Image (cartoon, rainbow over the protein chains, first blue to last red):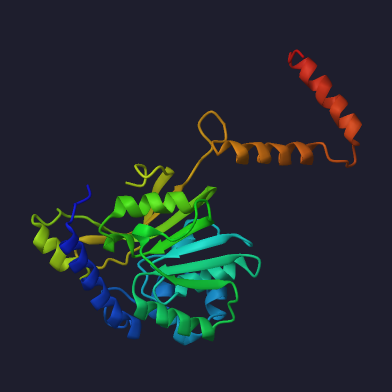
Length: 202
Length: 86
């Protein structure tokens, strides 16, 4: 069930996320309970052949919670959207999969993460990648743009999940697939909204 | 929630083992926009369905080891044998 937040609560949630990921943009190391960087990628069994093609300091930016590419193939020539791309590691992995005829777009809310993504882009040979600042709740793309939407550890941070998911549905082509790695809450939802807002991005 | 957004074939495929807190779990979900239904009917937007069928039709009747005319005659014979009236 989705909790409805008022505009002040949404603003505070967004600021909490920005505050945390500003620091993650510098380095994810030590900021998560699970392995990040190359250890995280290897732990989630990313294709070693693709990892070999990416610079080590780009791989170091990885802080995903799973491997969306383990959910099915991303094919040559396809158009892919990475929602909450962060520093872009999954975006570059997708770019390797779709090849020069395909294209990959990464979107993120946090300017510092995108700055890191663009720095990383310069270190890779990817010509088919673009990064864009924006919210998953208001995807700035026309209907039916992408063959595949991926996202890794992001939807749990989105206050209006229903709206964001309808947006994913809208921007996918009719044959489109959504490959999602994320965190789900196993216990009870916190009883009060204040505690949810305060702990949102922790 | 994915179903509510319109997705079909929504699957919780696996756990990732990367949990960000003691009360959350890393998981993998897969979902499709449209799917081949139980009736074998391809559910897609009509214009896409038509163009896909046209692609199939053109491929099936393309000149090959068997020429186009013979393929059409075989299809006609098969449809009469299956009881498909004109």
